Image (cartoon, rainbow, N blue to C red; front, side):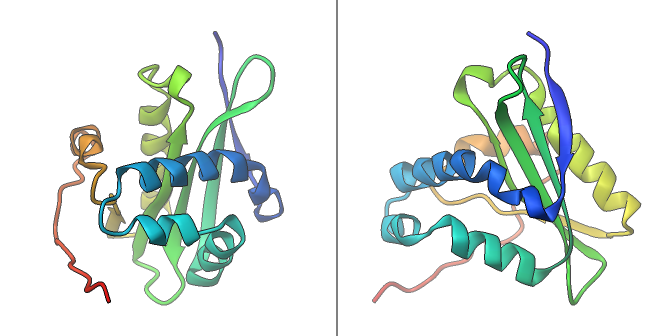
Length: 152
């Protein structure tokens, strides 16, 4: 199978909504204490927060032979601190995982963040999804903080 990586413009961001919703469902399934946070999360709010907080976004998608989007990666530059970049969201359809596509997307994101002059690059992994930590370690992403949030 052959794949194509394609960058999207802001106006095309909604094309990844179905995959983002699958990723959010993974967080619903994995989260123990904050399941409701993910259940209540929706695409429109997530998209608004992304655009609101970002000076600039890079949205890359992976297309399969049938020109269907089977993966994506969104990276951002912070609107206030232009030296801070974040890999916001990454998802590859389960049937296409372990094909090297995730690695390609992360490498592209890191390269883009460097080109934009960021000196701080981060990503956030939800509790329950720790199995991805080893994947991110190969790109030199390591846990820095453990943030606890009180539940009412």
